[in-house]
Length: 231
Image: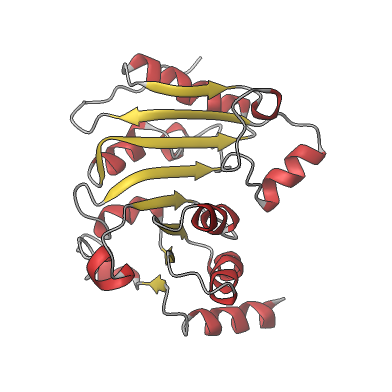
């Protein structure tokens, strides 16, 4: 297992579409690609969409296959997992996919104001006891406000009924516009090819009979957000 991880880490270093910046290059500093992803990385002016906590990159790659005129970047700290998506993108000859290995709380070191058009958050750790670590908390939404366009879309797809309910409560409290929300995605009428992309973890949840929830809302980048009270 350790040997396989080392092999994957070494291979990742050779991938031109993977960015792995050392901590001391980005902590309280701007990375060289900040504001320049279209010009220097993708070499086009297409919109950029992030998947945060991308794991093996299945959703990033799946989205990119269905939307060739949009650029997608999967973000995660786990390089051994990310290798799978990065490898698939190379094998498929995909030019609109990138991967960024970093902590999500450092995301503002990498992207400039309005550089991102949408954000996907797929099956994150729900952090039941640590509200401030949830990827839809006001802490993280505050990070996203600094890099997403005004009223940019946030997608949350999760098996966690608690995280879904918390996010819905936060969005309603702050009067953010909800486009879609469902507590049972595959028993709804909104399923489409994009929402039908399934990650490794989602397939496991479905095998256990867990309903998948989904909420899509717009993020007002000028609003001071309030955290909902925990019950």
